[in-house]
Structure formats: C-alpha cells, structure tokens
Image 1 (tube, rainbow, N blue to C red):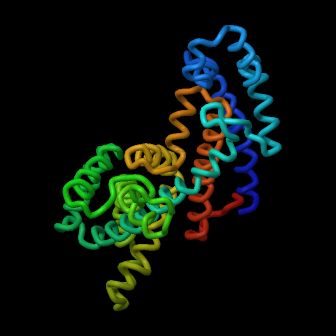
Image 2 (image 1 turned 180 degrees about the horizontal axis):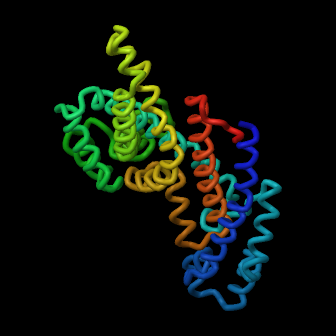
Image 3 (image 1 turned 30 degrees about the vertical axis):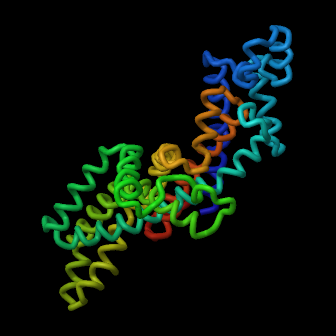
Length: 321
C-alpha cells in the first residue's frame, strides 16, 4: 500500500505542474484583459499609463513562463497570490467557500452510494421483476438528464409548487446568523439533486455485480447448505458485487465536481462555483490555477481511494505488485 501511494504521489507531481502551466497558457491566450476586468468601470476612463502601471502591479506584463514560475514558487511556500476579481488572497477565497462545497459534494456522494447500492441489491435479487425494470428504466433516463435541469425541476416542484423546501441559498432570507437547522433545510434539495444525478452509475454497477455474484458456484453452494437468502445476498452476493462499484468511486469524482459547480449555481449555494466562474471570465490567473490544482488533486485522490478500497475489499489484489 505504501509503495503504491508513493508511486501515485510521484506521478501526481508532473501532472499538477502540467495542469497549472496549461491554465496560465489558456488564460494568456484568452481575449479577456485581466487589467480591465480588475479596474472595472474605472478602466474605461483610465489613461494608458495608469493601465500599464496597474498591469505591472498585477504582474500580468511578464512573459507567460515567468508568471507561471513566480506563482508556482510562491504557492510552494503557501502563498497562492491575490485574487484580482475577489480583491482578497486566494487562500481566503478558497477557505471561505471550500467547506460548503465539500459539504454538498460529500452529502450527495453518500446519497448516491447508499441509495444506489440498496436499489442495486434489491433489483439484482429478482432480475426482470417490476422493481428491476422500473428502477433500471429510471436510471437510464437519469443518465441523460443534465444536473441543472434536475435542479430547476426540483425547485419548481418542492419550492414553488409544494413550498416544502427552500429554493436556494444557505440561510433564510433576512437571517443574520447561520444555524444548523437552516443549513440542513437548504442543503436537502441541492444534495438530493446532485446525489440522484450520480445514482444511476452506482445502481447499475451494483446491480450487475450482485447479479453476477449470485450466479457463481460459491453462492449456489451457500444456498445448498441451507443458508438464509438474506445471508446469501448480503454476505456473499453484496461483497462480491461491490468490487466493481469501488472502482467507480474515483472515476465519478470529475463528474461530481462538474455537477457540484452546476448545482451550486442553480441553488445559489455559497461554494466555489461562483468563484470559479468569475475567475474564468476575468482571467484571474492565481485563482484559476489554485482551483484547477484543487480539482486535479481531488481526481487523483479519488482514483487512489478506489484502488485502496478495491485492494482492501479483495485480498487477492496486491498493492505492490
């Protein structure tokens, strides 16, 4: 396990370096001017001399490799620079928003895994039954449904028509304090929508894995020994059927991040979505690079987690082989 983790860490270094350089290269090729974005309406009447001075102060007058190298060396020391669009240090921008994004993504992931696993096991128990056909049809439909469309549909139904859940935000309108109850009620819709958008893949993987496991000789032998169907299903079928699903966890991280950004925008959730959009449209080099590194690191950690979980669940897999 230690050797594999070390190899993955070494592999991550050139990946992160390439990703950060690519962000600066794409931003440099963008037609947007970060100086005018930073100056706002004042930039419309500012003299060229003032704009050039501002460009030098922001460091965007330097060549692309120099900008990237300056940012990288500072980032390695814990200084990610200042966000030109947020007018505050990048570390503060991320710290203020990351917790809410993690809360949303983690809640949605738990919903997708638990509900997808439960439905997958129940569907695999009686293949071709009404539950299997109904849930499988819904899963294939949800695969084609964009997350933002599901979010808008949920707002229309539960917030506007039924009025049982808030439409967005983190707290109630006019509230000056953040309470657990308000956060929990505002989290229900975005977490449920994001979780349901990720559910089809977990359901289909578990369903197929459990169906294959129930058809194997060890399961037939367990039934022949008189073990209860519950023991056979949970003790034998589920454990073997969960193995393919474990590899899915890491591969769903990029889709989860993308979906979370869309859901945060739809539900006005105070995560990193707004910061990401503003950084992209304003060519905020420092913030763009930091957020991209964060997303890339999350994908790499997700893939590592999948391999570790698979190895722990199946002793036949060698970590260091």
